[in-house]
Length: 172
Ligand code: K1U
Ligand code: ZN
Image (cartoon, rainbow, N blue to C red):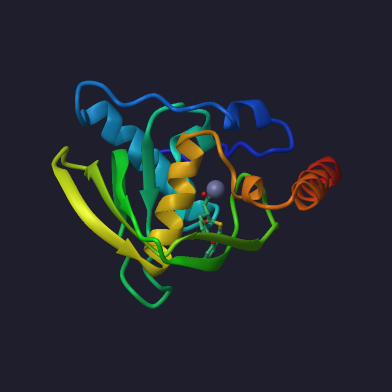
């Protein structure tokens, strides 16, 4: 396993805007090795989710672990995820992003979603998501479409956020 570099809006905005391609040919050992790297990268950051495009791989793959610090790790893998249903009810939650480091703001999204995906074993799963799971999976699925959480904010807030990330990157 290896920790990969996480791309940020400071110098990889155009890569992060790419639409990721579906995984063809199911979940292979090669794909599992990529997902293992993504998980290790996410834990090292640290974060609770990561999309493959954030390490420069434009494939529809997401890893996530929403376990609390005192709980055992609960790694989750989503290949070719699709949202089958969104609730009309909306919820506002604070979000952050490893590609927009140290910026946090509130985003409104559907409170619950139903999704379908392939898991680590390549099995099809249909699952309902609510709470932090719903927030995180929608945030990560936005990455697959080249959308960042700051794209849900006003233009002023988005431009300020990118400016701050670029300033921090220069200073580092
Ligand atoms: O997509 C990403 O960059 C990961 C992002 C996921 C996310 C967080 C919050 C709301 C929606 C989606 C992060 O993991 S940001 C870091 C973070 O939330 C965190 C870091 C350490 C401990 C706990 C949380
Ligand atoms: Zn993100």
